Image (cartoon, rainbow, N blue to C red; front, side, top):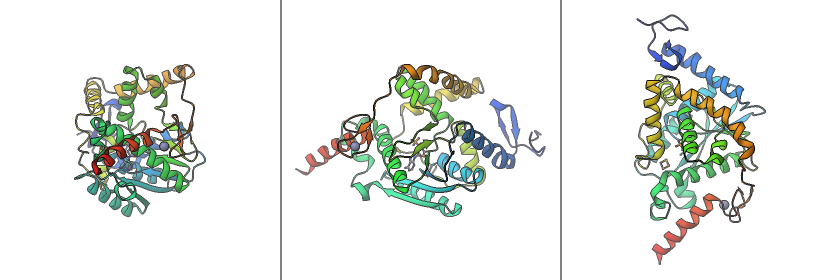
Length: 309
Ligand code: AMP
Ligand code: FES
Ligand code: ZN
């Protein structure tokens, strides 16, 4: 029988990259929240922050994020934001899970229903030129609305559940695609851009598998269904390949992250970041005269209007 390295009782879990046997209790009470605390401190994520919004999708990562932030920083004022994207057979259950989670943690929740607020759902983009990559449009739509709502709520920071696997996959994709502008933007803290608050990723060093383990051990309510639009996406393929590499060489994802973190400061001075201006339609900060969000909404409106004529 393997023993937990932290308390000596029977260990249920093995973390190959750390060669660590650990019991469920030490994992959720010590190991997991300690890593968040260290990550938050290392990148000064919460410096000067009292009120923080957490983007909660209904999935395992953001459920684990909300719970562990509350554990690790008990004096922080947290408010959850959930976007209901109107995806059939997925969004209803996602919202239910978020509501249950927030109720059980006694965290205030702000729900934004895309269809009710703006009259469209993510699926409606299928008919536009962005329809072949719904996840990408969805990313733009989500980012903009989360930032807007967080700005309206007057929080000091907006936290998302992006984990180590998400980040390493995105870094590698930006690198192999030669998109160095995107590469240097994949930092765990992005400064405030009024009216948007700063963005933080407290799970920057948390492997996806461990966010799942944390949520499962604690029995947190989360939606196990995968968004129907995600299947076959580039990021899923990339993550499976990284899993294969990690299985052969434990610690590979951390080594990749560390290498990129050394590379980014070297690249930064030579990669021109776009100048920020304001979108001519919505008036919010944008690198283009028409922001990515308004561009997609305009394309959608054109298609919907055509359908009505
Ligand atoms: P994804 O882009 O789906 O990988 O999600 C990354 C992070 O964005 C999640 O961990 C959440 O913090 C946030 N997020 C994604 N979808 C939603 C949603 N529907 N409502 C609120 N936050 C979300
Ligand atoms: Fe956005 Fe699936 S959650 S496309
Ligand atoms: Zn705009």
